Length: 179
Image 1 (cartoon, rainbow, N blue to C red):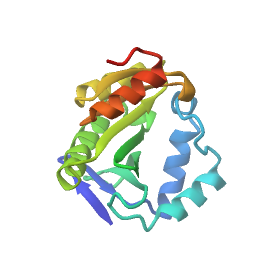
Image 2 (cartoon, rainbow, N blue to C red; image 1 turned 180 degrees about the vertical axis):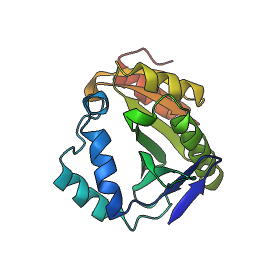
Image 3 (cartoon, rainbow, N blue to C red; image 1 turned 90 degrees about the horizontal axis):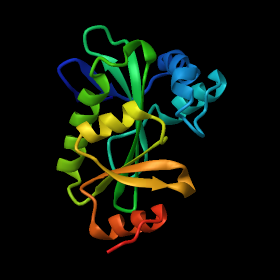
């Protein structure tokens, strides 16, 4: 099922044929170093793909989408959308072969706009490894604000459309004075 199309990409549900591509980037050290807690073995990825092949675009449950080139259908990355308690957390990975070509920006900008239009009361939060400078730059370019480093999750938190209450909670978790 196609969730969204951009000028160069299709965001769609995963299929069993995607397992090899997802394995290729998740097992690549250039990506894996930033993917704490994610599965990297082919058997685990195949099971993950099977679990998410019937995902739907909603805030009722997490869903996984593949970024694929519109011209060829080749998978170039993945996005995981994790809605919970009024906040949408986004995780993303782009194949090293396709990085630095604007695909993540194109896909995430369109997806965030669509999610915000359909679910306007929801906050957006992204967690990234503090050493992942490219992701932090991307999130800033997408209009997310750096809300600080949270030691409990060893991540920098970036937010968009975030309430004052959430800002205060993150500030407390980051050890900053709230005010």
